[in-house]
Length: 520
RNA sequence: GCCCCCAUCGUCUAGUGGACCAGGACUCAGGCCUUUCAAGCCUGCAACAGGGGUUCGAAUCCCCUUGGGGGUACCA
Image (cartoon, rainbow, N blue to C red; front, side, top):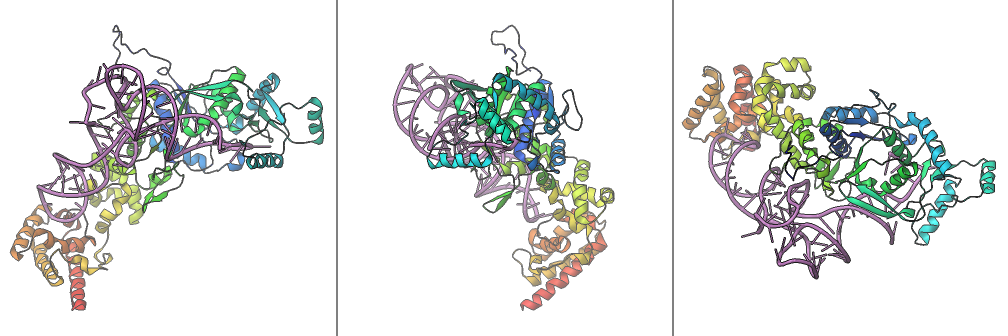
């Protein structure tokens, strides 16, 4: 940290360096996606950087959209990335509860202030009435929005509606004149005509607050200092500003984060996986978890979209990110996620792991794929021997199975559906079969049955047959792994052992001869 | 339609008036290495949206145009 005092260029600390209270306030309507996780990450980074608090608050004022699986998914995603919260629905805190539907009494109490000061009023318009209004506006090419028809009701008119038993909502009475200025830390002043805020609903007819009202009340009472949220909220920021003003409260510092674009670069990222040019792009956090992405990689990746750790360095730890993160450096430009870079990063993190770490991280999904118990797999000697062979070949943990499954099968479970794969480059079926037979003799007698000894013997064998090493080895590779692409051959043979290896060579040899006969 | 936000390589970004004929990373192409595939190393392609200003000097400041995005609910 640069803390040179005494020079005239000293960086004076301002309020954005003080311990901040930052909330992540999702609505539990669906599964957490990468855009939401990025917002939470920036919230968390700022809270941790300043030594403040990261608060989780659930915005469930729309009960019709409530999804019971959502909260668990959300918390799982945050925990997976290591974003621990200091206050939240599960752990409570000084401003509990942290679920808006449980805070209804507070909103009901607070709306009285606005009603009394004339900053809010009851509106009795029905849904049908409002729909008709909008249709008429559209037909006339006018801006659509509430026309304040009940803002200036006389006492008699109001009494008539009440007597009728009409349900009502409470609307905000926006200033009719002047301009409203919203200050966004990274975008500067955003100015709109005050009356462009068309008296939105604050309290619905069921008595629940709308988002706009609840967010202001909660941010105030929870003493939130910084609000980081998606760019899609810019247009409602003037309303929030006006509500804060109506209460006479100080608005938190606002930072509207750039939206995350679709991988195609067109429009906001979808909450479901999208396919662009035949490639599938994931969107939900649980999908990334299941696909075998590492939280370290996602953390690193997301941190560098909309903010930049260091122009000359791509890989960094979370501690380093916390140290350097500064909300003032957030970039306001919308961004498409560079997915190929994420894969690269994931591979980088995999390559940094020790054998033991990688084995542990691989075990759960691999055990499932192999039909083994995780504990049994973790103790299986084969796993630890395979890990160094596949480490630099893995992009995702979930790819582990296709690299190592052959080692856990028996000879009869390896099938050669396409025997032509057993043929080495530049050879024909007969030559490859001959190579197999030739190598089989080596495998029978080589001592010890280790990678080094096998390598020496096979190199000599290739020379003996007048073949290049690559084509000579192909039949063996496919014979033991069932694929043309596999971990290094000699180490693989050592893991398999002599007996099992010979069984596979024999099966492959037979398959190849049958194939040659069929061709002839 | 109306309101608002944004604008550097294909993508993520550095750049806050001169150190920039614009730096890094991913992707892509070529090469080296090599038992397959990777990894690693080397080289290369590739951008300041356009037009006006301001200034001795603009990627950087201002204006316009264009393009992209967001919003326009008793959803968040």
